[in-house]
Image (cartoon, rainbow, N blue to C red; front, side):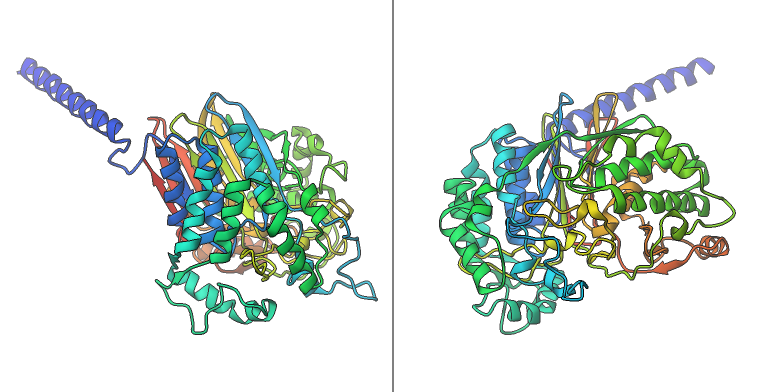
Length: 570
Ligand code: GLY
């Protein structure tokens, strides 16, 4: 009897193993398994059109950088509120062999910019001046960034990577319901700032499924396709930019455009519970802040306390309060200001910062650093994550700053100007559009890069790729990336669940915990309030687009349902 049971069990195990192997083989051949995970690569971005273009490049034999170039240009067409050629961004790269690098294609202040250019005679910020119109724009970096990335790592020909975006701009694409709402909402501002008209304006209201054709943008992309970076920074497009500056009160010159250079920078490296973190150095504050946050909570048993429990939230919030206070004081463009980068992420320093935290009672931001600030929240930017067949990974966050940037579409060239100048400390000590306070380190100076929160990141474990992650969200970028990593590492969530999970945010000033609807249950909220935390409900936080490599070697996508984002693998 026992022999029969043993024989039957052995038979069953053999059958199970055979079926698994068979399914594994089929899955391997198709590059996909039954859980919707992919073997050969993946693109996750804010638009299905852009993700599809990226995956097509991968299928053609392009690597992750080739796909990133194609996606960046495609987003400039299909996601005009943040995708761009008139803005800038950061790329974090990790090769399949573990080589890491970062590219800074952040915008720069024009050569004629000056410290007080957005202040009135009494020395107070004129808020709209750094937000809307030609004067709000920094010298764009995206085209130089893509050309630089392609030159160093690209495999396919440049023109093949720009052509899909050019075709989309010329032939048009169907806008989503969300885009129809956003474009309609922008109508008054676009009309006011674009007296000569733009393709983004329509007489009637925009509706889902309307086809947006951008012929001027297509012409610009054609020049970039044929002439590379010179097609943007010199010639007819540069002429159009300078003419646009003259139409408003802008100050970007031909020399500023010609001089713009993207810069390779040494990544910020850190570890968290055995995972290697590779992320962006200054002029992003994001990388240093992310490593500080992870180190601040590493000593605490978050997984035991549970996802978004009162103890977990309390310790994460206290870490955020301290890290954002550091951000305001110490971070700026490293080419202009000696950022104490190593000191800020030293274990001893981070530990000492957390030593003042008291379980019984919320710290106050006034004791961490003085200040009383009113927030202004706008959070547009966009992120995409890519992995190719060989395992090379790219994490890019790119931005115009506010939604539709400065609201000015360069006449004749068809692309939106950024309003990145507002990311400087317009008046050191005053908040920017995200309510963030900055100090001397981030004061305006000619040709300087403004501080950013963008936090593209890549995680690896034991020499193997683990995660590619990033998000838009202004000041909430850093905390959203932080929480997404904690959700996976501490709470064992899948990539999609970690992205979907509701988030909370504290940025030192204002001294409050912002929470998405349903982020915390009512008991947790009561416990935190009893300790002195001010809890403030708000709308969506972040739009994380991320990829996780499973232990079986498949890629899991996490495309944020807060937007129209899409993960496509193959
Ligand atoms: N403009 C948003 C950021 O760079 O953080």
